[in-house]
Amino acid sequence: MSIGITTYGVYIPRYRIRVEEIARVWGDDPNDIKKGLGVFEKSVPDRDEDTATIAVEAARSALQRSGLAGVDIGAIYVGSESHPYAVKPTATIVAEAIRATPELMAADYEFACKAGTAALQTCLGLVAADYIKYGMAIGADTAQGAPADALEYTAAAGGAAYVVGKSHVIAEIEDTYSFTTDTFDFWRRQGQQYPKHGGRFTGEPGYFKHVLAGARGLLHKTRSKPEDFDFAVFHQPNGKFPRKVASTLGFSQQQVKQGLVVEKLGNAYSGSSLIGLASVLDVAEPGSRIFMTSFGSGAGSDSFTFRVTEEIGKIQDKAPSVAELLAAPIYLDYAIYAKHKNKIVL
Amino acid sequence: MNVPRFCREIPSRYNLIGTKCENCDTYYFPPRRVCITCRRKGVIREYQFEGSGKVVTHTTIYSAPENFSKMTPYVLAIVELDEGPKLTAQIVCDPSEVKIGMRVKSVFRKLGEEGPDGVIYYGTKFIPA
Ligand SMILES: [Zn+2]
View 1 (tube, chains in turn green, cyan):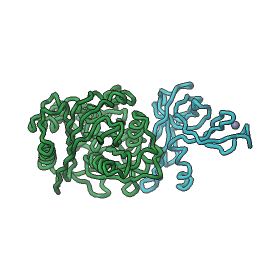
View 2 (cartoon, each protein chain N blue to C red):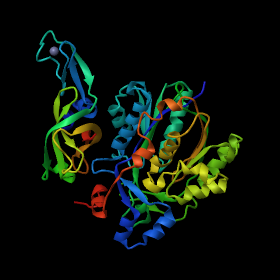
View 3 (cartoon, rainbow over the protein chains, first blue to last red):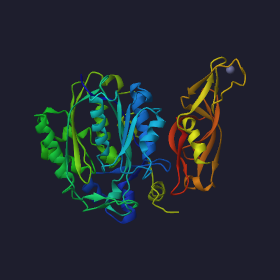
View 4 (spheres, chains in turn blue, red):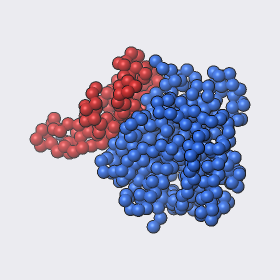
């Protein structure tokens, strides 16, 4: 019996800020930034949105797409690096808001930008072992970049929820592989508002080392080649890194294009690769094969291969697509943006 | 608002859980355990509202209590749910955008927080549909 994704849902806040507007405030050349980062605008949460509200909206969208009810969900794991509480789970808020309580397993995950894919692996294991029928994995973040830091151009908000199960599978999870080392590329100490990172535009020794090793590890494990896949999704802290790893690994830019959402979304951290995967599922056809590698600083990567089933057509248009969620945004100026992101301490 | 009271009200705040009298098809929000029309003959069941409705009347809040001060200005409205009940809720939109009769749908948002170290309150607001 196959096991895999039975439904998915995405949430992206309606607000955006353009690279030009941030560059204007800090006196940077917007064309340099856009060329350097491959990002044109990024999503901004509303003043009353946080990781919990984004996770809830993504979870509700996933249920709406499938016809599953909250009581069907036996586990909820929420991956984020911006959980609203330091102590008090986001997963319980989501569980209550989709009426999945009280008979379920729940916990929050943290692993920088790959906590959502770690949650996906946990659900895969629990469903495979028949402990639960359906498990929900969520990656959601409202990422913070310090004012005038390079991260401010990309740190965005958004989330995606995936339900793993054995029936009504829309994309079979064929295999998964992780690559983990103890690396100091990016961190935030308890109680600090903004993260620190070891270098501006380099992806070494974090991103490239772990994404390349993880992707190669899964290709080797599954005895497959890049050309065996229709789509490839990589964690996208900017527009350049995923394109570069794709070409280093031998994937074409055509394979990467549909899953590359960073240009208009920014880096939604734990939501990043999972929203990219949703963008692929929005258009995938039965038989399509998808390769995905997430990345989390600190550092590690989770790779997956998926095979899309005949079931996909039944649910694709039952909830908003990533393209729809990215369309018709409301643009903010820097002052209002600062208020949205709580950068002004009153 | 205090924490225990908020916890008791979570089902209705998060998911618009009310009740319905099966005897006379009347919907109640907040939930009622006794139908005011049928009294003892009433058959009360839990009901989750769809979350669609329209604005009956509205006002814009420019000066709010401390726990809501970061949200100003915001639009407060009486929303009539499609099933009938009316409730007071925040409409997430620009104050110039809200109109009487405007269709709205429910969303999950932060309602407020008790300072930097207190509880964060979540619940239902509405956005233009
Ligand atoms: Zn009655």
